[in-house]
Length: 436
Image (cartoon, rainbow, N blue to C red; front, side, top):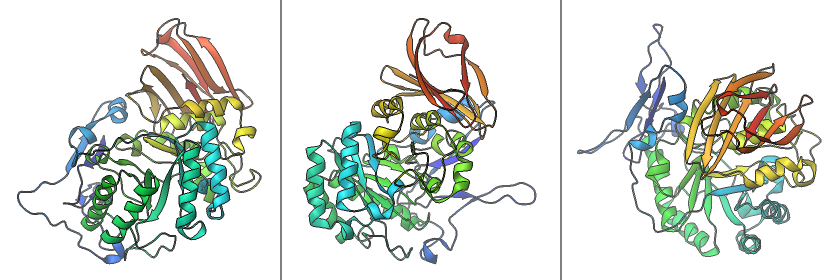
């Protein structure tokens, strides 16, 4: 059973499940009073005629309908029309591996060059660009990116009385006058999107802020990603320029904590069943450094294999994916991994659950146009051997298989499908597999 809600907009708050009472009973509850630093009402204000959001329960005797559900989008419709043609795709960002010190002109040039080498559409310039690079040099940076056929997303704080965030730019997205001023400038210089971070809660006033940012951004042809934020609730369809939300313990936790690396495989095997089942998930993953620092020789240690990381590029779905690649990966990572990452799509026409159990392993297939990507990750400590029925393949199909050998090194083999109804695969512990 999968419980969620959809259709939340500025006219209501987001809801949650309570903790269970002694009898195991859960109830639907409004946000907590302490959210937004105690500002704003807990209950929504609604005028009549009005609508509450949809609360959805997906029930089945197996896990397939949980992963494949489309109910969050079936129950909603676009709230405004757009005149813009938004382009989805892949990107890179320096902050995830090189952190705050990388938000300078020279390091952003390096990441633009990385995106160009990968054939990616975007680079995300994270917090502090307004101070460390400056508005004028940011214009110069964007011209350089455009000369490389790369476009830019810029980071903003949501700001306001609900947080004490000092990462800048601040005090812009929470104010209509300042927000529209900056968005006009962003459109003028050719920025394609913004990432807005650090929201204060799920009260109605915060839902209103999300909607105001999205609506104003669409007026200026800007896509929007939210971080430090709530679960998207049908927003992919409701807001044409919305392209993702974090709303998960995402890749930054792998940089900050060795424990999160120790349990990365387990967490990854949960997301397709839970978080990513009800909305796109901007995870910022696929880390090919063995050590999570600038020089790949210090910091936290990755426990998962390269094949595992490649698999998550498909396992986790978001229409604009900022992968945690670094310039050194071009020469230090296996060439097969780089070639895969150059070509992996970020949008999918069909998803099919094949096998798995939350916390143990997950195998699913996603189709982009005429190409199927069948991926699996193994969160267990033992080798996983499966026999799969793959009706999307036919006998004689030529496929490429990315997997780990017994030494946990990435190999890419070309093979021909013999019996798609009895396809045998092996996934190493904390490893992955991809069939293309």
